[in-house]
Length: 275
Ligand SMILES: [Zn+2]
Ligand SMILES: [Zn+2]
Image 1 (cartoon, rainbow, N blue to C red):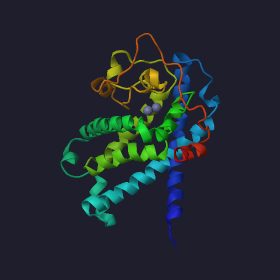
Image 2: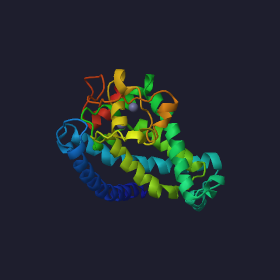
Image 3: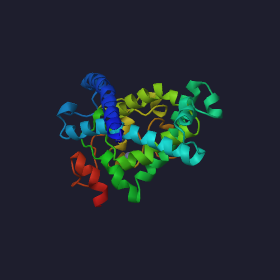
Image 4: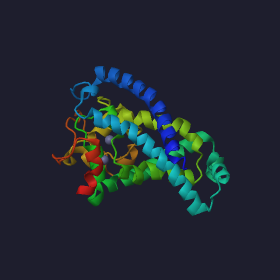
């Protein structure tokens, strides 16, 4: 009998075990910070209308991403490098491979962040156009934008996004060991940019994406909704002409034009396929 269902169950347990303490930590940090520096007047995050939807995404996304990241890494090594043996596979990815893996680990980590941000910038712009928007609309559907809205992504958006970008860079040779600090950084940072905080980051607004920068991206298209595509480094938006942070003004209304967008997780999963 196949042990796959059992393995998936174990992975699910492991992920939940990891996600719960991180969630409690983030909840404490952002509840406290929002108390002092709220960007918009709002009920506390746990009383937002679609909190159940956000919580489901919060647990679903890490499990989905993990399963597909591993799956695509195995598939990629087989197709591109002709590696099929389990031991060879582990040796191939263990500490990276080729010239990139020779660099100091912190350089590999930084390189990973810069290269993934560059790829994600253009993928993000692609998702704002034509046939791709219906998948990305899920991410923009939060009207009460909070740190917990960060995980709201359709699986198609994840696959042609963070998951494939991660796999490409790990296949290129960057050591997975960088995830030890890149992982916690991206988790914290993605919650941070969605948090209800009025932080512009002052002169550092070009260096690191902050809450005001990304909250502008969640406003309507005619405001900041077609600007600020970078996940981590706003300098990309500066470079490609999409930087938007008007002085003395804070973003204040979020969501998408489609008033009939479904609020529940299940209906949002199906939404793109019904368009
Ligand atoms: Zn977007
Ligand atoms: Zn967002």
